[in-house]
Length: 270
Image (cartoon, rainbow, N blue to C red):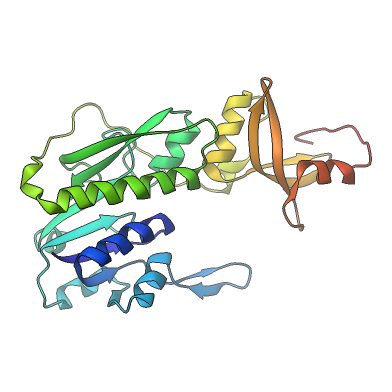
């Protein structure tokens, strides 16, 4: 098949790489490079870097879509982060991989939201793209387990592997998979910010553990020092800190951090 791929984030790269091994990729659309780090260095998206490595034509503005003269058989969109207009949705069949049990968790952060809420499993949906966000009919869905210590990165890896299987199966014969309308009341996710990482020690051990594994870190003070808690697990009904990063220092294990306190009583949130 002749495909146009649209995506941005890390977990999309293995999926697109597998598609590029099996199909003719006309073009790749991704988000424009943006400043990152303290020095605000302009950095291309992971999908952009991947497409360049394969010698594929990359577009960083959706406004360039109409300049493509070759007609695709299908457009595949995964974690792109750009609203598609009618000129694209009508150009070819547009399908999307969305990692949630639709209509639950429409929007930009379904995996993080599922982990934060303590969900034990989630669906990966292969769906039709329509103008309304994540509201299209479902062609295929597969369920994957969220283990107790799975992080957002862990779940993205699971989604990538599942999406590769689903797309390979679907693209062999799309007509075998009739569309099924979504049913039920939709719920929506939002983009998380640094404020969401602040730990409220009044919450349960499970809630704090979910927060850290969903967002990648939890921010707090320990003995007056600003820290990021990077990895935890639940042990004997308590929260065990595995990895921590004091402000201005490199990440370290909990034992190394404790040794630096020289026997002082530990006070969290102060």
